[in-house]
Image 1: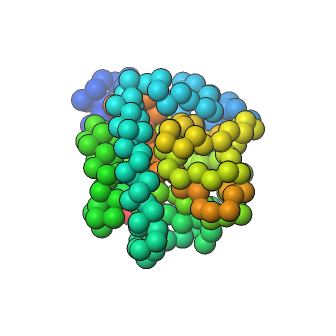
Image 2: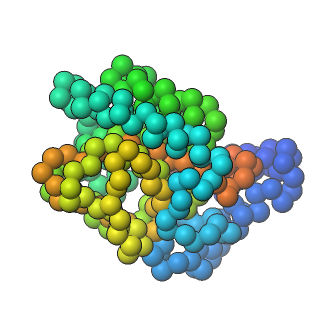
Length: 251
């Protein structure tokens, strides 16, 4: 804890109550993180009290449902815009830089990054840009610590098994363009993408993906707050990760 973070937490407690961020404080306590699912061992932070469930029902949360329905309803337009961007605006895609590695055979076009919409993507992806802004950003379900991007795995590409950093956000995929031979595994359970539909999972669990097809596989990925986190917890987690990044020279 730093003085800056202590102050931020005090402000949150004053606004929401003394016990409003107890779970965040427990997560940061010395020795925390020992009691977790074996397939979450690679995650840095596990907020206690959240269910250790790898796969979630994308239609099972009222907070997410309008966004999921809007994304799926506009899938045909999103797919068409993606095809145009991929063929005519290749420079808008870049090698995806995961916190663990960078992959040339994993391309990304960002819609949301560093706490805000990527305005340069509005021209090439207007439908997805609008839906994301209106139904995820303006409604505060997106996790501002992370991002939303079109994730394109080239034929033969794999994403090696790994855990992401924490469990207090979860990952929504809209299956935009899915060739045969593609799959994703989370906590040892393998599934495919159903084009035009969403899937949702907790990426603090070990997960991996592959494109065994003959053309690129693209999903629209969105990092959403875990629906069982509270408003004060979200504020405290933003303060925490922002401070960690500042100390690491990333902010």
